[in-house]
Structure formats: C-alpha cells, structure tokens
Length: 183
Image 1 (cartoon, helix red, strand yellow):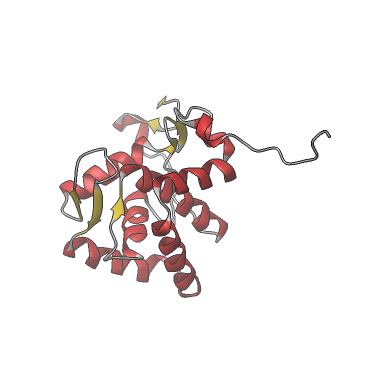
Image 2 (tube, rainbow, N blue to C red):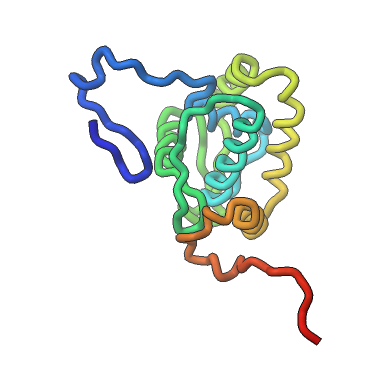
C-alpha cells in the first residue's frame, strides 16, 4: 500500500484482493452529479466555484449525517482543493454527463449537466438524498450560485481559516480583529 500526502491510499491488485474497504452513502461521482442536479439547468461558473461549492456541499452533507467518500480537500493556491474532484469533473465530461464551455481555467468557464447527466442526477437524488433534506439542499445550491468567486472565497476563508494557509491571495482576506481601540 502506498499513501499520498493528501491521505489517498493505493493498493496493488494483490494487496486489495480480500481486503475490506469502506462503503459510503455517496461516492464522489455521485456527489458531483447530485450537486449539479440540485439545480440541473444552472451551470457552475469556474473551477474555483466548482471546488469551493463542493467543499461547502460536503460540509453540509456531513452535517446532515451523510457518509460521503473523502475527496481529500487540502489547502491550496485558492483555498480548499481536491485533485480527486478535478479528475471526477474530467471523467464526467469525458463520459458525457457534463459539458464545459468558455475558456479553460478562467472565470468565464462553466460546467453544466448534459441530458444524460440530468437523467442520472435525478435518479441519484431520488436514491441517495432523504426527502426531508431535499428542499434545504436545493436552497443551499442556490445560495452557492449567488456567490461571486470573491464572495465564495471570502466565505470559505472566514469559516474555514485553515483552508487559506497556502492561498496565493490570502492577504486579500485578512482577519479583522474587532475590539476596543486606544483613544
């Protein structure tokens, strides 16, 4: 077994044979499709909003008791980042579940579900999301959509300060110490 710095474990086929692995309520490809499927007609604007939106969605699902496969978020150049979820996005695009438009890596880039992706997302939401949580999760996704890139970064850095430690722009989001001044 080999372990990467983000905690990801790799096994050879011989090592994996007969080993018990964790099971999850929601696996990563399902996690991404559900996130998109909560607002199936609304694209996600930019890779930064994709990563930060999924980071916050993970926190929301965990708070509600869902066991989601670990995407291994780490503090990175613009806050929480998952190399695994970057690959999941690529794989869903290659598989025809998600389409991408705009300039790669820019704020104009956007991602949205294809018809195939919408159909799969609807099935996953029915199967994986508790009825009592659905309205709140749709509202959650709508709130993520309302943030600008700057707004979502500010929210993440304020509420999860450990995720800005390696950020290239952390100085822009300095903590404000409120209190009494002199004079």
